[in-house]
Length: 300
Image (cartoon, one colour):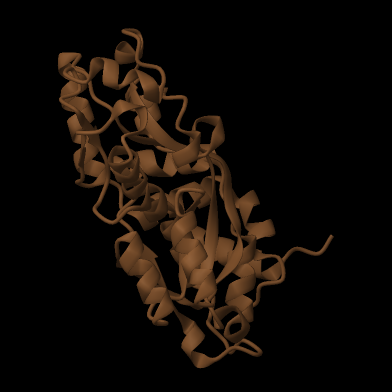
């Protein structure tokens, strides 16, 4: 069986830090050489961008990552300032995607992760006191200080929480959404856990928080976060016209898929202080078998 020469070349680039020469790619515009990507500041997207960046470098491309909140990132795609986004969590971002589709601003390149989940959770010691469903929150309103902790302002999931509060769903009228960032939210969870205090917050998998804390995901939020405890899939998006202009790079992104275990490993390393590309390089050294499917038919 003939080896994939690109996979072999990129493996060499990773193992001995020698990049594959970036020769001309048939049918691609020179502008394709730099691929502009966004990161909302979420560790999972930092991890997957890191993997993509290492591989793109080996293929002769350059990944340029900008930290942008989800709404600003999508506006940048609409304005053709961002080419690719690896963090379209669905169904949480459905409202954004519907609007972008109507504006013909994006293309769905493919699904890059399945088996994810994204909804409200509590520490398991809180669940043991009877909080296992969204409808249980109001019964313990004082213990929670009528607060739900979210992530960065503008995040679609925060919007879902605010809609829930505004509608008075589950008796949550008068509660407040506390917006911060992934890191600040988890620091608050850690402080609460140290005191065994009640806290309810946005949680998701994959993420090392599921190993760091004993969590219970709440049932009952299907109307806001989808069924199966916020069961989710993550998609890769491109700005409209980019896949046609850059078919070789688009093929790479279409084939670039991840799994829960891989992302948990990478995020754990990043949260432990490793640089994203260093964590990605180490993982790729240990898992070179992943390169074949990702790089099938991709040229340098």
